[in-house]
Figure 1: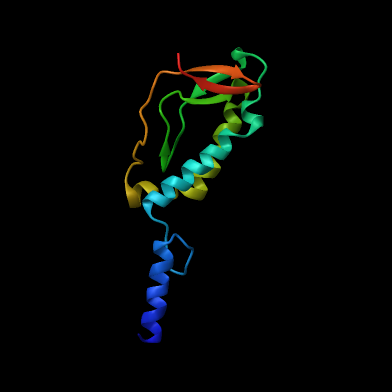
Figure 2 (figure 1 turned 90 degrees about the horizontal axis):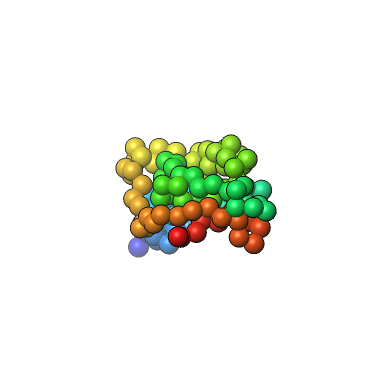
Length: 129
């Protein structure tokens, strides 16, 4: 195998393994997965979810370019909705630029159930009835 062929093969192998290599762009699935992970990190932020009473919590829908939650399924403090929007815009900018144009609409990977917001152990959570 020539030097150039070997370099191309190594680059393709690195892409297949998910490594960041020159000319290796993440797949649509990888971009979707990384945005879901980033949304999960936002969800775990106590600034957005700390509570003392159920009334402090609401459920909102999360929709960014490469991730969409079930309607009204994301628990957050009522007074943190604007901060959540800012954080989700950051996730969108980092993970979802041109996603719809390159990959199409994100695919839902879940079954949506009716939920309600509750304060459980000092954190807003989504609960099933």
